[in-house]
Length: 293
Image (cartoon, rainbow, N blue to C red; front, side, top):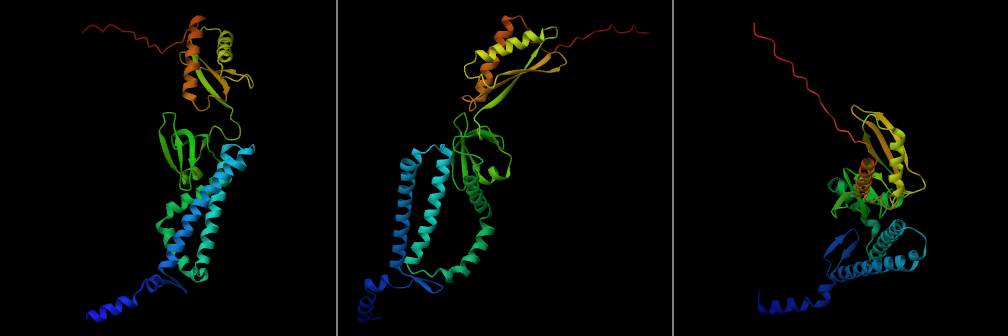
């Protein structure tokens, strides 16, 4: 190729023609550099507007209502996802993309992505179910798959649960939908904790009952209504087994520490009243060996 041909080619490939040159053709639509830049601009603008819209909804509108934080979070998320979906649809139409021509291709891609991204799609749908039905909410204390903690964040793919040791556990949303979940805060924040106690045989059961109820009444985080209860559970091998049941709201998110405080108080009260906490004992009788014949 001569220098004259190169100059002629460079003149033909000016900036205008380069920007309008069709790069990709999908159905009846052709994507050029200009259309791609415009589409990216639209998407970036939608992301920024979505963030601003959610902030305004939370701070200006929902903050004035009596809805709890979990409901406000779910409403904000659903509005944000709806806004982004409609925004991307409008952006494609404005940029001249023929969506009807993409239906067959989108169907084929959907089948392929359904097999390849099955777990991600499952978690995505599970996230929508959680936001819509609200079996859990931000701030709830839950137990799932051996993990116990407070729900800190709910995303479309996973949920972040923070334990009392400040460890963040990422739980897939599908586990929260398909598995059994213990939600300590669902509906009513009051929970009842049961503390087992064993005392020695010969102890007065009525005295034990009074002592245990006194321990419950003295603890500031034990609710007066509903009132605490003491159950005579069973006659054990070496002890009379009782159970102290107390209600609380403030300490539902730290049940282990709460039980520990109750146990400390029970041990001190039983010791002050002379009630023995037994421990298993085994008596071994040694017989002399028979004389050798």
